[in-house]
Length: 386
Image (cartoon, rainbow, N blue to C red; front, side):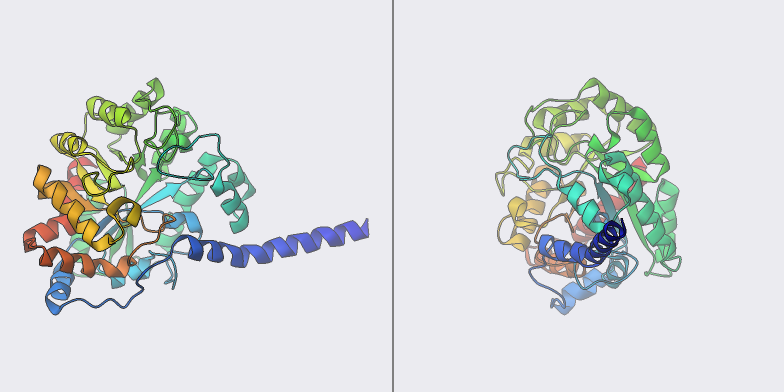
């Protein structure tokens, strides 16, 4: 009996010690930065970037990894201190609750083994999270609120138009004031229950991407098996999101679902993090036709930063993707959506945004166009739709 207790204690201690070290190891491997700071840009680009009032990024998965975002880290892509140092006004923090083993851009089954289960266990997250997508979602939303409370009243959780206005006003006198908007990547997190939509709204979620890498109760993923459009449950979710002024994120949806949502939603939608098929031909990316349809609905396209969507020369690909959207539908429909901390290698972390400004300047974009791309378009969209 006593021997058994000793064994259990040893197992518990080994597990506890593992939770202190293993998560950081996993994250460092999963989210490399190809060119760490400091980043050198011209004085003209630096001055323009530092003059920007509202820099925004539409997608990061930093909540997944368990780092305390109120503290500066030397790995990963995003945290609050680096947002302040990098003059980032707004970051959309999305909750990832499931990721299929063997995840790829072409085809993934919802029945594949889930990578996030192992990650939750390795992180020492509550047992209630281990096998519940909804519990994982509520937990990550709670953690963002907790981090914000630990940040000297310098972080605003955006839940309404008034919060955006408060952010704009606060930054006129203190550019250390930053904000986050809470989203969900994949409505599988709702577990097919409309009441869970109400619960995540109460938890602060204001953006939902119906799909991630596999089909769910709302319909088909661009990387799933069925290729389906909106289901009846999906229509219920879209209708209620419209009523609640929640933002619909079309990243990862199947082509049929893309069209169904545009037809069914009474409000503009966005694509938070994507590439453009004319630049990189991938099922992950948007066609010219999809971009035109999205713009006609008043939407915006966030350009991601990693090679599978913008090409091996990421900076060149980011600019080419922005230029394609501008030429197709106008500068007012393009923004940035890095996919930071999304199990991708990126050219720079959140301190590297001046590099984009310099690349845009070299391609002849005007100052007003650069301001629009770097955040003014996101600001306008939020003020009109939250």
